[in-house]
Image (cartoon, rainbow, N blue to C red; front, side, top):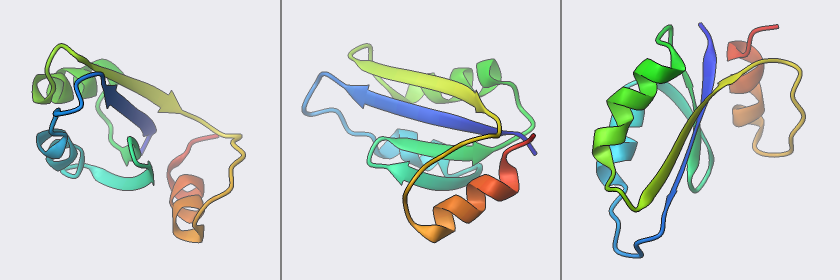
Length: 89
């Protein structure tokens, strides 16, 4: 199943990302950083974006990016294992 990077942030310090993270966690997911997740889905990046965008106000940024090997990173082993498992060649 293809992997995608979901990354977001907001200019409004009072913005609540709870609704967005609940929507992200409906997919198979792993958290990469405070404001980024990788998900596994057969949906297109456009479809994922259209699902997640209503969870944010106009002050927020949201990107959905298709992930593909190779990759390099340093982080928790469970995150590295998830990425190896879900990222296509």
